[in-house]
Image 1: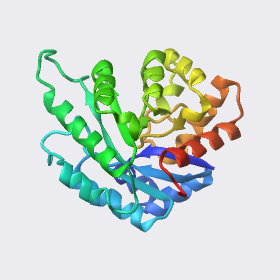
Image 2: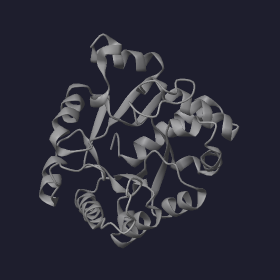
Image 3: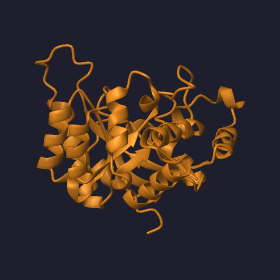
Length: 261
């Protein structure tokens, strides 16, 4: 069984599934993908992910506000604490830092850092792991995680696209490393080296669908069924079997998010 540890099921256009959400899930099931973490990116659409998770027992969800989400309701500690009490919520995020589209490098990004700290504080209070998005913000991300003692709850570096040094430092902070379709891209040589080195008890796989479809589906709308291609690529890179990667990544998901406890 495969687990898609990070997807946005509420964002997938259903016209490719005859506007039937159950067909999306059936398509995933046919690829032996039977569990999903539907990740929240703003509070305005939290109910969308919550309803899916409440309706389908194989879907879990998170609560959080993405670092690049602007013009949305700013999450307070009180907001996140309240929403995180819903039973299907197993994580806080996605949260983090993203400086990639910052044209002015002197631009004040303190608002992102404050939002990030808010999520960490909540995660520690409710004892749920963090889902971290980081892009062009390596040092600040790691610094804030350390300053806020995020290692007490840990979490996952989602859609990891950094180097081995950051992977090591993240693991030292009690975080897992999750690989998306990027690891299948021919240009992703550095990331593929990271995928070879990550300890098997810290490895997760995800689609981040509907974005970042893996080879051989690159350029299409992504979907959870395609997580199998990521597992296949990582198995090849590590000289391992597909079955083993499927098992350890699902076991790691259970352990990180306390599934079954």
